[in-house]
Length: 194
Image 1: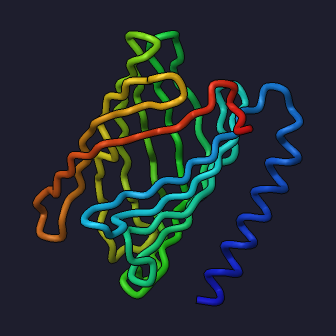
Image 2 (image 1 turned 45 degrees about the vertical axis):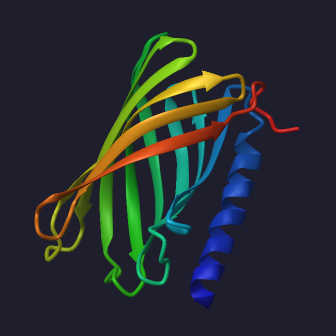
């Protein structure tokens, strides 16, 4: 547990330094995503992700993910991305991550993870999004896993957005686990808190 805390602090400080150095560019956009899923008063996942983009490029995307039980399984990830297509109504983005898993159930597995997201905005207040990813193991004894991260629609109300969606991933027996969900997002209009 001590090593996890040290790694997290190192990654956090490194991210702050990189964001501080790179944030001076006028065209840089920094995004911090901290989210959690809760069901029956218990966390189903926790995510912390920091990314920094310049135009179509995302040259820094780092984060942490667990599924409610960090001692059992957790992931650290780092990656880069590019907006393949961008228009006022559509955006198609591809990112590639290196993922390191840890925990009692992780077997210290490492993955390359291609991620793709498509966003459609028919109106300034309505947003449709679909995103999927693949876990490609770097160990030969692991298998490739496909995941529908989410398919959702959001309604933007000033600085708040409310949404509903669906996610799916395969179970160990080959059947798919399906999860409908509800989202609530706070995004300051100016892009800055305070």
